[in-house]
Length: 88
Image (cartoon, rainbow, N blue to C red; front, side, top):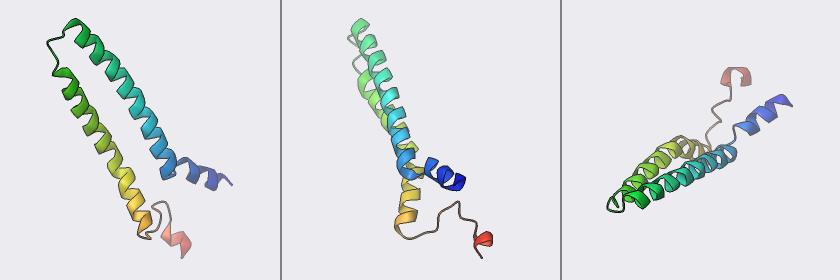
């Protein structure tokens, strides 16, 4: 029963939900900081697109491993945690 719980903890959907939550938290904090900066320095309007580009890069890089795992499972690959020696 413990093995099932450990597998569920590392499921792709759970990892995706956690990544989404963390991304939303950083996005919200960043938007607050950018809006404060723009309030005090309205001529620095380049801050918003720079922040958006940086956040987008971090989100894209963070999803590569998750996408790789999902594609591996979609094409019928064995789970990475499967011990082939024990299986044989």
